[in-house]
Amino acid sequence: MKPNHQAAQLLTTLLSITAAIGALYGVATLLTPAAYLQMLGLDPNPSAVLQARYFGAAVLGAGLMLGMARKAQELTVQRALSLGNFAVVTGSAVVTTIGLASGLLNAVGWGFLVSELALAAGYGYVFVRLLQARPDRPADKESP
Image (tube, rainbow, N blue to C red; front, side, top):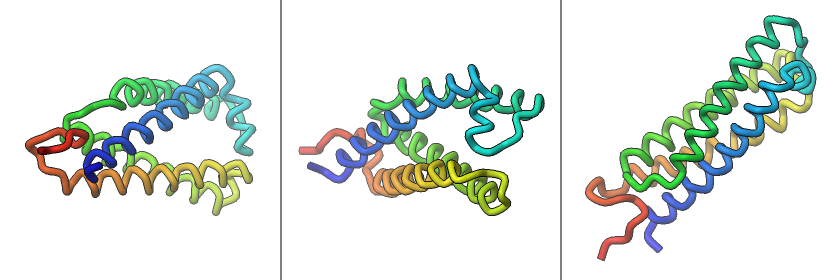
């Protein structure tokens, strides 16, 4: 199996996982924003609840898009998906770290951080592998 094919398969898996997480958290946060905030140890005041609902809508939409795009075969699209998701989960890991260090987030935040770091490592690895792929063929096709 070619390295590019392995990277494409891993990307499909990562996108599927991220899509499922996005759909789950998006719906949960839209429907029960106060419970979501309390689970993290945050105060569910009205403005935090409103922001949580915005977050839920964005995460749900992103999850749906990633689920639809998970089988993309074009190298440019695969690179964009891997780099974009790397940036999102790495940024989220930084925010989660700040929340944990400042005491704003409770122990549940550690679970978020672990999953964000794992996804960041996966997306970063895939992006580097896809950078090595030839641009004249899809990353998940083997050449003769």
